[in-house]
Length: 47
Image 1 (tube, rainbow, N blue to C red):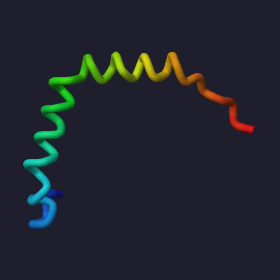
Image 2: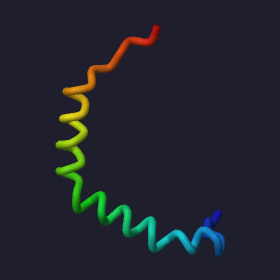
Image 3: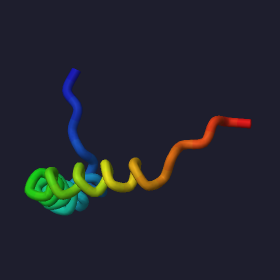
Image 4: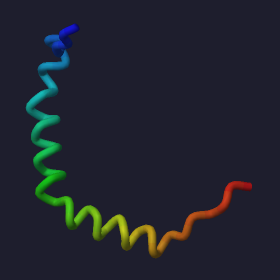
């Protein structure tokens, strides 16, 4: 089975690729910020 993007989906392709490239470029900064957030916002057990 072959899958293809619809015409509407294809209009998002450039944006999705750009977002992926941005995330790859900034992955270390993203992970550092995630670690900092997790350290300063302890999780709460569900009640």
